[in-house]
Length: 108
Length: 119
Image (tube, rainbow over all chains, first blue to last red; front, side, top):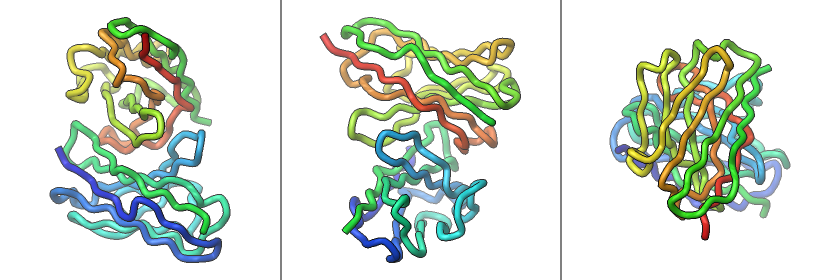
């Protein structure tokens, strides 16, 4: 089973700042990594798939990069609605699909 | 628009059973693999099971293997999860999710249904 480790666990930032979230895989997942956003009480929403492709309707301030074992989600300038928990997920070697433990982006 | 609506959650005693349903609309259900994902209170996401579009391929997380059964009715656009021998650690919100690629890319999720296992 591929283990995904996200860091940091919590990121405290102000609106307008840049957010950089990390996801590291225990073995290579090629580019088969996705990012999801989950706001409190809401369902997860697909943001980025295959490491760097934005899903439909996702603003350009969200970008993903990386391949192999190290991946990054960047939010270029935080909007108030971006404060949420973000999960990475691999689909390179499944089942099982595996998710990271999440990074909470909170208002500083 | 794509809609997934789960139902069937509730409070059940340890060792009990529950069947969850997921009603799909807004897309050709029979063309897509479907998954169940769960989230324990205050915790992260855990994949539970998937079923292929034609029901030929099915798989489960080790944590539920032998206790849970996934199924689907393509004529009625319904996905199911039969959960038996429930344990306290199965307490979670259960989401159904559409697989966009038949390869584990979950592009639409339902709103979830809460299952609580407690005496």
